[in-house]
Image (cartoon, rainbow, N blue to C red; front, side):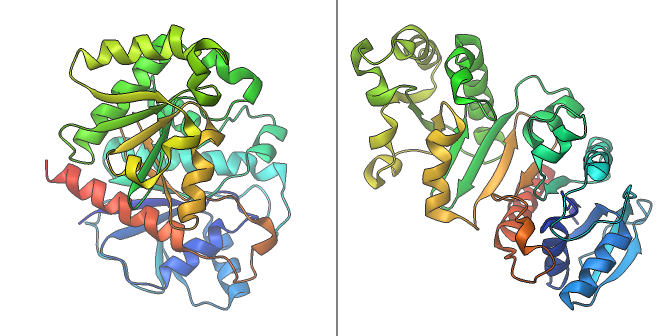
Length: 328
């Protein structure tokens, strides 16, 4: 029996709502919310949904989720949370839920971590440098090269750089970084997704993939040499390709994953095709982690209008990956 840890994320956002909505449904694994129980109970009342919380006991064997009940690993809020109103006092609470969940994953108490949306701005405003889940989880697990990948049925998009200003992207595209990301992507597609010979399409950085050097030389000086070196080892890499013509059905039909150079090069395409059903998967970690594809939606918190499709997809993906890992 698989046991999943759920972190609701920003307490003023829709993360707690989604966990409560999901708790109403059947699920073939044990779900443990790493959160303040009082927050979940208060939000369930606001949503008009029944919820019984049970304090999580790691000594007991995992049991399938019971609709209407949610096991909770308690992490206290600093201040009561109000729907839609950010409070820097609770920034460390968000980080503490992640710390507790990751610790449980590292010890084997949890088989995977599923995260709700956080608000990066309020965490940084509170004085904690925080670029995003991907970077924070890598720090907690001492992972040298995390890779952010989002997936919908028929399309996986991974990123060389994640949460950087556009002005910093070119400097961050280095040969060592690109090689490390490609090795992680190759390894995890093989071991976690059971794809023996992954076919990876690689985007260029510049328009028209540099137009032979006339629109930038990163493709010639950095990307192409790395791809040539890894192809010589047997990796199936195509590119660098222009991003504006890569995402067409005939091309995507011949690939297992697309590697883009920066956040907004590939993710708008994927989210347009499957927003609300996409899953964020962090590769390169010693733990399994999936997440929703959306933000905190503060304006929807407590209204009942938030949709739980992405969280359910993240849970299903975590279950599948954890079961595959458990099976060897």
